[in-house]
Image 1 (tube, rainbow, N blue to C red):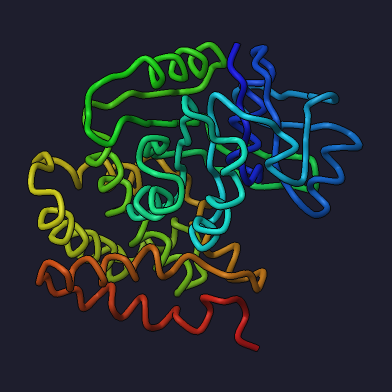
Image 2 (cartoon, one colour):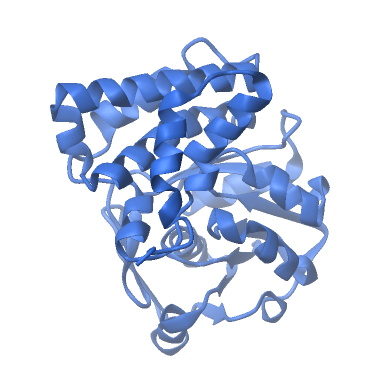
Length: 309
């Protein structure tokens, strides 16, 4: 049994926490607001094509200190909360604790390591489409729930293998890639483009795929991000763009859209600075021009702190 704390137990963190709890692990959800109140009163309900769960006794707390030192912290806060949440989890990060980052983009592991040190940080790549249907209720909207993670230096370790086995035992699609940076950048190439185009057009993926002009723009923006990726991580495999492109073309449902669009339409802060914004920032660092993503990032900038009106 592993002791797991989920920092920022929204849809994604709550989902993985629910699966691990149902498999017999000691899970504490760290949440806030109405969602926390519902979790403490009624427990967690999960609606999923992989099987529904009702967990009336799952533990939910407001602050990390109340969770106690953990074997694993699933770090599922938004990008703009990484530094503050990193400081908040210090009391539960022991000498053997690993903190698995699950943010969109590629910069969260570095930013978290600046706070708690690289020894504790394990970069992760999560793909789990879902939302909070109502406080205390998580709706998982596809048949996949992938969580890939690995040591930043590559290779295997006992701690990541133990978490991998726990997730597999919980019926989660866990992966231990040999080079987690490759996975981070593979998702980033797709996600930065998809999030920006979803948010700027206010459209689901289906119409973006069906229109030849928007479809071509999707591909061009991914190629631009790929050029940045190759400059930043020279040993990326030749087919790094193919997985993301196939995901957009053939895997994601037509009625799906990036979660950043949900945040934008609800007037919440958005992760623009860590998606297209990071494509631009890292591109400048390596001398790679990024006119498409610079347009995306600048157009979305007024919404970064929430609704501008």
